Amino acid sequence: MRPILIPAYIKKYTDNSSISPDDVRKAYQKISGGEPEISIVMPAYNEESTIVPTLASLCNNIVSRSVEIVVVNNNSKDRTEELVKACGIKCVLETTQGITPARNTGLSHARGKYILNADADTIYPQYWIEEMTKPLINDPKVAITYGIFSFIPIGATGRVTYFFYEYLAEFTRFYNKHFKTEAVNVYGFNSGFRRDQGLAVDSFNHPPGSNEDGYLALKLVKKGFGRMYRVSVPRAIVWTTDRRIQIDGGLWKAIIKRFKRVFIK
Image 1: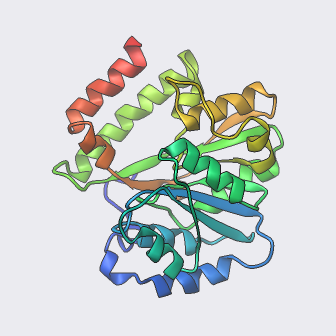
Image 2: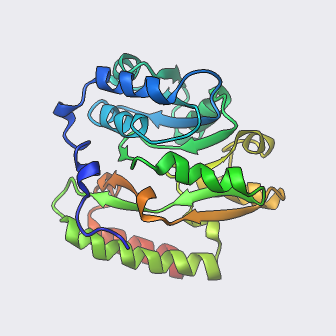
């Protein structure tokens, strides 16, 4: 069951003024240390307005294994890198612009056995790390995990409207899984895989006309590493801003675009 309203434990991270890099640094020290078992890789381009609360939400996760976070600065012109380093988190530079080279660079710098993909404008619940890695740890037949997400409105569209839109989107994901390919349901800001297997299939590289995240899932399955696994427990729902929908021209245009992509192409 999806929440209609933004939960309080998520909402506290949307108020940037209440979170400082020092708060993030202290929280990060509690989940990191020693050789990491889990690496969270996060590309970032001009994310100074969202990067600190995003990192805070990750660093306040309840997790039983050592975690590292690797942020890839993809030529940011703002204070993104400065803020990441102030949080005590590793920040590497990738000068080739684009999400694919940024994710590949992050993967090459990661040390953990398990890789989780995150984005810098998303808030992660406190059990996200645990729930996204659990299937990979417990079942060798799972090659990649992917989760579900809800929207944090930054435009004129309200949260209640997005609640109904998210259930409409669930129908298209069901259609994709059973009649097209499940790989298109995998998003780069909410997925995980084993590091050595990701490297074995040439990382996030993909042919023109495909996306880096879904194509990685496809490669892992075709290589025989296992199946895709959807993490659907409510406590693992991530919350991302609706800026991509705003870029597409608003909710109705986004609905039409999704419909054409699923049922016409």
